[in-house]
Image 1 (cartoon, protein in one colour):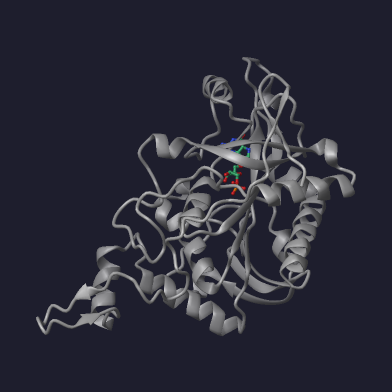
Image 2 (cartoon, helix red, strand yellow):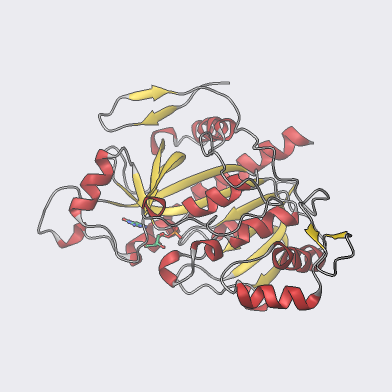
Length: 351
Ligand SMILES: O=P(O)(O)O[C@H]1O[C@H](CO)[C@@H](O)[C@H]1O
Ligand SMILES: Nc1nc2[nH]cnc2c(=O)[nH]1
């Protein structure tokens, strides 16, 4: 397998190794049998693992913005029973990239508002539906619409669907986003394969894993080195070459800020000094949640605008969501092809 080149500030490139994302070995997937059970409060000395409906209701009230395992399990059951499928690959469509879900064959569609306990999408370019079906022979589920911190949702709620995916049977998360390019070598319309991130919300003391840890999902203190699967990055680079778009493909570092405002010049300068190549308002908390429950992660940013890192009076250097959406629309064909081909490779390798 070939190593890949990582974008860095001075235009030189560093070649990386080839190992797989590691397994944290803590999450046992669907309905773990060895979850730390509770003492039965009746004092009978027996151990029980199931919550009663009353306890579940009480938990929901107590954690109205968090999701106990049993609630996630209910949502996952609703989707697997409703679709008759246990998808292996989960896709999160970025702003304007909803067409990634439109190419799914024999789709079963679940509007978010009809899924019990699911939030609703409030952002233009995020339709608000879950699409389950097949793509290149693989069973997949795609979120046509993600949840953002700036919509008012806590991070645990933003990334709750990743846990739903896990309990539906998903092993691979494909997270996509629209992002501003800070690396001066990036052009609008380029694709940056994420090989790492800088979690600005984490710097500010916010995490999707805050609060009590349920070991059925993963460990209290998950490691995040090797979060972005190197095999999948290398495969995507090869696919980019086969598609003839290698000069538009980069590997780099994404940073998530809270939004909804775009960044100031001083912030962009600071991010660049920190080694950030592209900036957005999503993905990182989804990746953290996915790695916590031991999913393999592939993520990319479509560069929808160039971020100014110098002061200028030019109005056209200001980011805006219309431009973000327009660029995403223009580049959706290439993004769909990249995703389809990569899914095909995963499917063929596991067949
Ligand atoms: O990250 P996605 O959802 O692709 O969207 C990006 O584009 C929107 C801003 O234009 C923000 O929501 C930002 O996060
Ligand atoms: N934060 C942020 N999010 C984006 N999403 C698309 N473009 C941008 C950008 O320039 N900044």
